[in-house]
Length: 241
Image (cartoon, rainbow, N blue to C red):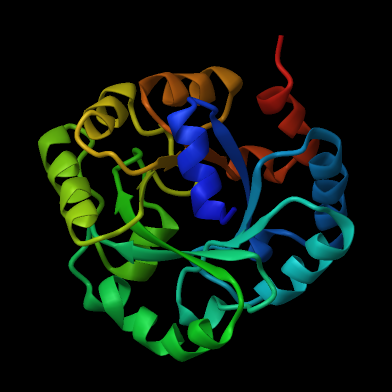
């Protein structure tokens, strides 16, 4: 079974999935070891590796995770330079909420031959940046404006356009360090109009916010910033009474 088939099956069966996002820029060797301990203890469904800006190697982080965990590792690349062929899969992100051709198709062209030569599974993903209450790194790097959280019709139409273009996943992103996550109303509005799996991330800081995203229709929830200071906090998301 491919990872995409696993995601589809989980979505059909209403089995919610959880991904830890590790940004190599914010993760030294000591912190990475803390992540490894937490991942092995609490077993998230995926580990996403990547970020908007990167001076440190994603491949090194992936190699450490591969040697010390058995959780599937998925690249979450901000641009073509963040490609690493030792991951299990890649979210091939097209920033469909923006109009910067570099992040709609340009970076993909640069990485296309390397992706073809790799053995990793490619997951074409429509990436929709939504205003989370502060300027995020993705907006700065991509030179695009997030969609207003108060305009769900535009968000829904953008998601629909991505699906109609053949993208296999839709990712609603409030941005790294967002003051507030994507709202339940927005998630539900998108969920009601698309049939492909829905990923939600950005600004999710607690089990209750994660649960709200699931209840609104998210199939996969991604948590990054909330774990950066203390990866052991993963227990609060995956083991909560």
